[in-house]
Length: 150
Image (cartoon, rainbow, N blue to C red; front, side):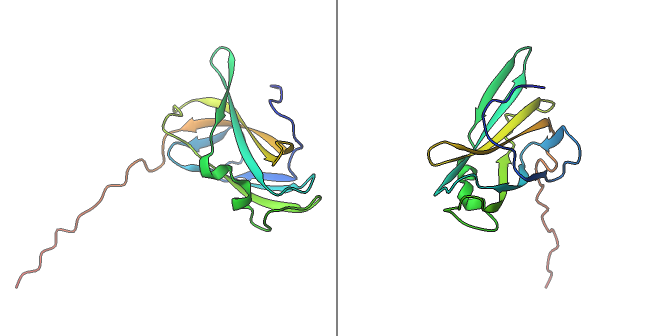
């Protein structure tokens, strides 16, 4: 098993939507949605979600991935709001968009972690993944060619 990139406790529970057994198959051009339940190890006014993909190209390379607006953890809490209190049990929906630059067939382990305002880890989890083709790459627009006649 690969080593841990960052510190942090495991969450109480996590579920990757559409994934029963690893590696999770993640389609390009879609959000992967991970529902997480965790216990706050300390009171935190704000939290950030960070992601690192470990990809093996003969050697293992760790690639930081910017989650953009999805990195603002407090915006995606489903049963509470920030600030969170020490020992509070929190439900969180984590989303990460699978960009087209993620090549189909790529296998990696993605580490997601949430840190508080002073970058102290609240939790961390690692998920083996494989990128698969987009489910609905482009929706064709059908035009109605029915004509009204006088």
